[in-house]
Length: 166
Image 1 (cartoon, helix red, strand yellow):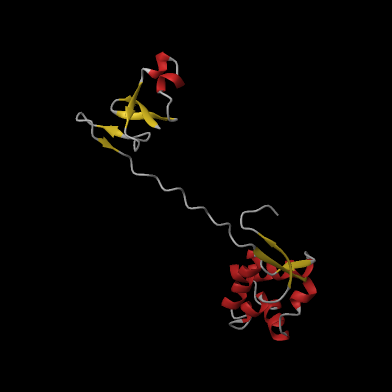
Image 2 (tube, helix red, strand yellow; image 1 turned 90 degrees about the vertical axis):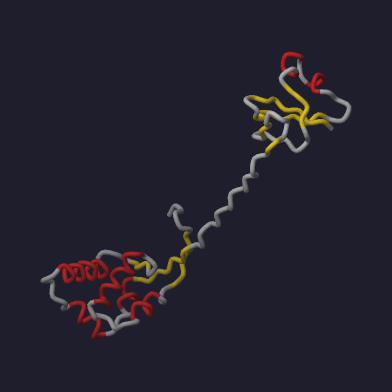
């Protein structure tokens, strides 16, 4: 097997390896074959040759590292009643009576009202639920560590890959 290259500006722009016993002239028409010269077998596209005939080869490019798909996010759901039952009487009382004289108070009232009256199920893994529980914990309306206990509740109903369609 022989190796031939088409050279442009001292760079191999096309490389052909011919089967044993076959010349480049037998593979291509004469007007194409005339552009190829025999080169060492290590020459690849991008190899360069200097004026003394010494070849330099490009650094091989590593294939890209495949991106692993993200692990599916578990989706845990509770009915609204099941969700409310996760809170103690004192927590429900503190949340229900928290003053709405501040932005935080308005948010607490809005979210608590939404959870009580506007939805049938609560997705425990929803970023909104996590945010609300963080707010309740920050305002000491639920005890420290209660967010984690509440988030651990619920029935696993599905898993969804990050960035995937619902």
